[in-house]
Every structure is written in C-alpha cells, then in structure tokens.
Image (cartoon, rainbow, N blue to C red; front, side, top):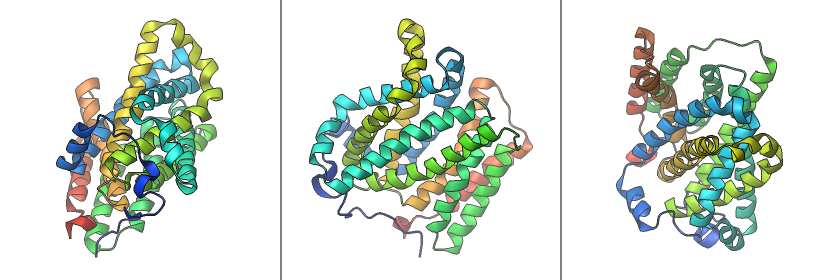
Length: 312
C-alpha cells in the first residue's frame, strides 16, 4: 500500500462553500489544472522557487532584508486581492476554516522573513539543505511501501551530493534557517489542506492567506521598503521578485498539491536543488562537476521510482 493522502477532499472544514471564491483566471486555469499533470505545475514552481530568491538577494542592499520581504508579500497580496476577493472568502468560511487561513497566512509571512534573513547570512545551499530536512520527515510519514522508501533514500542521497553542505558558525543565521525550515513544513501541511478543497477553492484560500500575511508583515518591513517607492526601477524590480517568488510558485504549488498526496509532494521537493543547478548553468555559467551530475541523476531516479497512492 502506497502513501496515503493526509487530508481527504471531503474534509468538513474545507468542503462545500468554505473556501468558495472566484477561480483565478476563470475557467482557463481550471481547465489547465485538470488537463496538465500535477508534476508540470510542480516543475514550474521549482524553477521560480530559486529565480525569485536570486533576484531578491540583489535588492537587499537597496531595500534591506525585511523591506524585500515586505515588498514580496505586498505584491502578491495586491495581485491576489482583485482576483480571489479574500474578504468574500473569509465572509463565507466557517470558523475552523478561518483559523486555518489565518494560520497559513501567518506561516507565509514569518517563513518569508526568516528565509531572507537566513539568506543574508548563510549560503543558499546550507539554507536549502536545512529546509529539506523537514520535508524528509513528511515524506517518511506518508510512506507505506518498500519501493517508496527506496525512492526517498535515493533522492535524499542525490540531494546531499548537490547541496554540498558546509556547516556555518553563524548562530543567528542558523536560527533563521531552522525557523524557515520548520515553517516550510507548516507551509506544506497547511497548504495541502487548503489545496484539497479543489484547485479553484485552494487558490481562493491562498489569496485570503496572503492577505493575512500582508497584515502580519505590514509593521515589520514597511520602513525598510520605503526607498523603493521613490525609485521606479527599484519598485519594478521588487514587484518582479514578488511575482516570481510568491505568485507563480504558490499558485503552482496549490495546483500540484490538489492532486498529489502530501508525502509525494514532499518527496518531489528534492528536485529543487536540481533546478538550482540548472539555473546556475543557464544564467550564471556555473558548470556542474561529476558529483553534481551524479546527484541530479539520483534525485531524478528517486522521484521517477516513487509511486503515489493514486497510481495504484
């Protein structure tokens, strides 16, 4: 028996009108959500997962770390607001669902801030490795077959080869990195529960949660973000980071989570170092060595070997 879905679509807190709201981009996205395999949506998310932070780090000297987090979340919240109408989502939701959306939004806010604070002090490979630790636990919790256990072992081995983790002596940076890793687990668990309501409802829930995230981060990074409002090129760049970091990948995650068991999604996160390596080749001319190539092969092989519950 393979890994089981942790939150069934019939969950009372998420079923029916609890997250009812307009579907992002209407029937076009709804049609693509069902026609395209969930792995395609995950692949798009995986690419933008590293494009966004790569651009954000370049803006740290101009708007500060927390200012960049504020601009990222504000951009996403303002884009989602007219499309998903979060006020209607909250009005129609029952109390358990409202609490779930508030928890998800708070998780998004603190996770994004801690991620950037960690990147400001530690190498991205170390931050990514710490982030991946929690996802291993999620994947293990959902495994019910020797085949999927072997797939996880192969993928983890490949990830370790890719990240080339070197420990750091920065306790503050490590604190933020481990906090980000813990909240990333929360993002997967809470996001999966929302996504199981269905692709359209899940995105409406994401829009509502992003509005909560903006409220949480509003007093934290506003002062640092102010210089962007007096520099149009800087503001445009920050908006681009927000779209790349919190709009495209989060929507794609919802579309993937809606059709993948939680453990399967957690295992596929081992592909993130692969996309980082490929982006390094294409954009930074960073050619991988033999160990990197072996790591890529192992991760891809592990994900290919895995079989979600829906596969029978």
